[in-house]
Structure formats: C-alpha cells, structure tokens
Figure 1 (cartoon, one colour):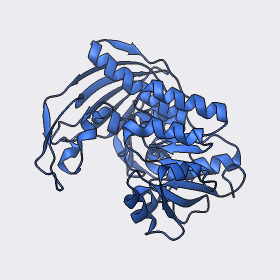
Figure 2: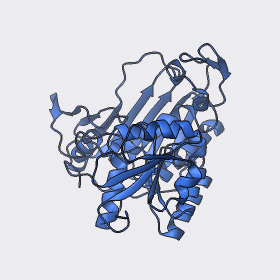
Figure 3: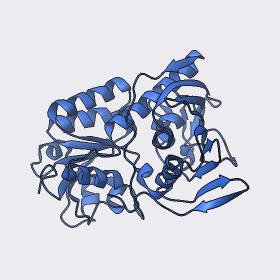
Length: 359
C-alpha cells in the first residue's frame, strides 16, 4: 500500500542501510536499489528476496516506489533529491541535505509545491542517547542551560577509506561531514542557532590513501580540516564546537550541556544510544534511558517519517532541521573565512521529542 495512504511504504535505496533496520519492517517495503554502476545495485539486490537492482532512471520511473532513500555522495544529494521529487516521490537523504543552502532551498521549495516530504540524516538524534539527554534538559535537570561543548576529533578518514578524496573537496571536511551529527544534536538539545563565530585551518596540504588498492596515493586538500566555533542559540545558550580531521588523539567529551544547577554528558551523536550522565552536586550519576527509539540503527529516520505520514504528523528528521544545520555550517565557514561573526538567516522548529520506544 502506498506510503501516502496506508501502513506500508515502498522505498528504494541501497547500501548498508538495508543491513540495519529497513528490511523486514512493516512500515517500509524495500523494493529496489539503484546505483550508477548497475553491478553494484544488482549485487545488493541479490542479498535480499524481493528486492530488484535497477538503473537510477528506472527507479525514478517505478510506479511501486513512493520514497527514495538518497545515499549518494554529498555533491549529488541535491541533484538526486530534486530528481526524486520531480518524479513525484518523497525523499530521505544522507547528510548534508545538499551541497549548498541555495540548492537545499530548491529541494524544499519543490517538495512544498508538490506536497511531498523531505527527510534527512542524521537520525541518530532519535535514539535513547540524545533523547534521554534532551529529557533531562527539558525537565530542568540541570537548571537553565546556558552553554554546551561539542568535540569531534580524528586524524582523518583517509586512514581507513579506500576512496577518501571527496572528504577533502568542497562540500567535505570535518564540519560538513561530521558536523551534522553534532549540530543536529545541539539543535535538538538547545534549539536553533542565531549567530556564529568561527576560525579554521588546514595544517596539511595533501593526504595519503591508507587502505585498499590505491593505498599510498597522495591527493590535495581543498577544504578546512580543523574548524572551531561558537554558536549562539536563539534562546541565548552558547555552544563551543571543534570539528577536526587533524587531531591524532584527544580525551575530550563528545557533547556536554551546562546549566545553572548541573551538567549533562551526552554520548557520541554518531550512535543511537550510550551512557547519559548527570552531574548534580556533589556527584555524577548515570541516567536510565527515558526517551528515544531503543535498539535501533540507520534507517530509524525513514521509519519515523513513514509513521508520521500515516499518522498525519510531522516527521522528526526533517528537511527544515537539515536546512538549518546546513545554514549553520555554511555560516560558520563564512565566519572563519571572514574572521568575524555571521548571523544565521534560517530558523527551524525544535522537533518533537521521542517517547521511550518511539511513537
């Protein structure tokens, strides 16, 4: 039955998401996978009964596909989303929503014109980790939140990825690649961002492929690989962020939120669960999971979107939030380049919290 009218949706996508949460769920029925290289789509399809490997054009023309899961490289996110919407299909994409806010705005405008939905990763913010921390903040568990910190440090994806060049081209870098996880969590916890201040650097001009058949190949770095910034949330809280592909090792928290009466420690926003810890004088205590989808994985946002359409409510990992996060990242990079503060033009509504177990 169609996503627009019944309990099940027919979805086309591909890649490792099928091995997570999509196959076998009642909310979605995976019917096709597509890739620019047909043999890749066929190889994935062969692993799952009832899933066929098709060309991108055939996927967009398919009458039994209502929603397209867009797992292309960042530079192609906007193009594929526009094509899917143009074909009359809902779209849920990998992060970021598009390469630029201008392109992302085209996506949202077309969706609105056609009465279609746009969803976007990350959906990790729907898990018990971030949602339990949000419940602590919303309940006044740390008093009034006034600041937060978010740190993502790694020596670079080229050490493990066999084709890492796109991480170091425009649209890549630590902020555009990993920033959505951290910024989406901060928006979920503290609301939208009004202004940013930033600085950035690129300590190494080249990188070296570290694995696969091209190991040892050197390639240029075209983006900032270490970005630091301060985000002023609309509610007044200040978040300090560091996103880096240059740090060999660190002993930093992932995310912490500081309030007038305590602190909440948030687990890795690239995961769905993990320990949430609360400090109220005189000690730290573990917080029992009290909100969020439990024991879930990649694809949770697609399921939430399908359930939302059926129920006639807004889906949580939505295009409005993804657009705002992209706007914040663009603004932060602009602030770093101009060595000044930049007002963030967009705003988004804070998505509804997820009850424990997910509804």
